[in-house]
Length: 310
Image (cartoon, rainbow, N blue to C red; front, side):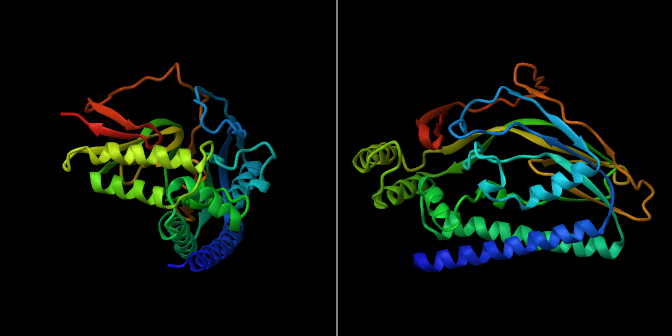
């Protein structure tokens, strides 16, 4: 696929996404608001994207101001929608929930519209991450050359709809994203990065090529059946625990943006019980159960690539 075709597809998909978010905004504003809680988190400043986070102070917001902040957040996809000191490489997060009363027809149509928008978000991510053919370190420049200031994490992030929840409570989760890889997949990834023949700051083109070549040599010396993992640490994330009384079940959702709770207008529990989000303090975390992890050997730090040891 040619570069121009990928650019055209990306721009078309993004315009459709923007239009879809405008339609969602109008639809939600037409529903009967019940209650809302959102939580404002500290900004991540330029140059501090990779700093360890040990404490997060939360500012709660409720009622009409929470509805307004939450609806605006869904459409704030560009860096210029935020303060000048905000990093364009970090996710802008606003956990919370917006609760609306809706008829059966409204629930069905609103859920369908949100599903369509989420498909566009997936499509946009696929165009940028897969169809562009670019390694991860070059995608930022590619996107910002054509959609200047786009916060890709905000654009990719799916909207979550809840139907008749009984309670919505909030907390924090520490985790890593783990992808099992084989030797050939890593070799292909490194060869693609090498063949791009570009510099990646802070390295010159020659320095970058030398480093990737060494990484490639190291991987090719491994046995073909070696078990490899990319274990990428994820910064502490806000989560929501949603309880459904009628079904007697709890569902946990990532909650980096407000959830959308739709309650049937004739529901027996029309207004969900909403919890608060406490401040995060890494020094005061109670771990109930931590499964025994397999021993790993770090091979390529920049890729978070590990070899599983027997």
